[in-house]
Length: 229
Image 1 (cartoon, rainbow, N blue to C red):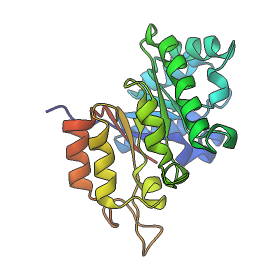
Image 2: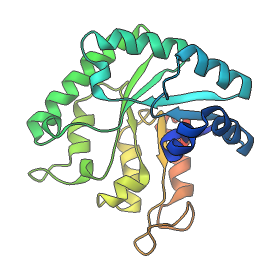
Image 3: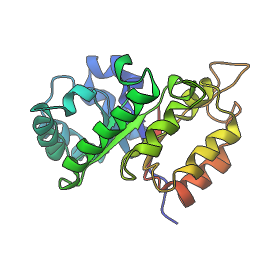
Image 4: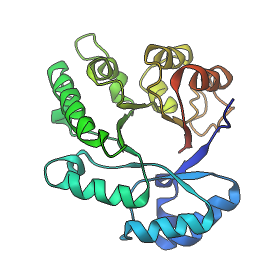
């Protein structure tokens, strides 16, 4: 069985990164993380970021980027940057309301993701979507997350954030069912605890069924990266 690869989402330490990016990445490596997921580049060129990561022995687990960077002429720039960064996973973490306010707009958004994904295929890159709570709050009785991923191409990454999903009303068993429903599509996941009693609960202190979740990620989800946020 392959070893779990654990990364840190840099949004969690964004203020530290803004003050001292190299020092923050060094500290992350010293903690034992194998990779990082970007959420901004702090004005650095891709080649410079790649060198810092290489010097520290860190991999790129992905990047969170706005949907606008994947549209029109900007897509070419985004591909070139991520090719040089040696990143394969381009994850959209949020959508404007007009792309997610009805079943019709969710279906339209899925078609857009399919088109972008096809353009990324020859580059060996994967497009993905990351959830907050709103994706699990029904629209006319239907769950947006399911509307979207039922219509999205199978290669589009379902980056499930466990804590955000439970904040949206998903039960611990329901989180497991999401992985089961979409085999092979959870190439990266965000590990986040949820507790109805303590909003500051750390992993292992809340209601998530971690052992079952990790086992499903390994055997069903096709998970390559487990990301702490």
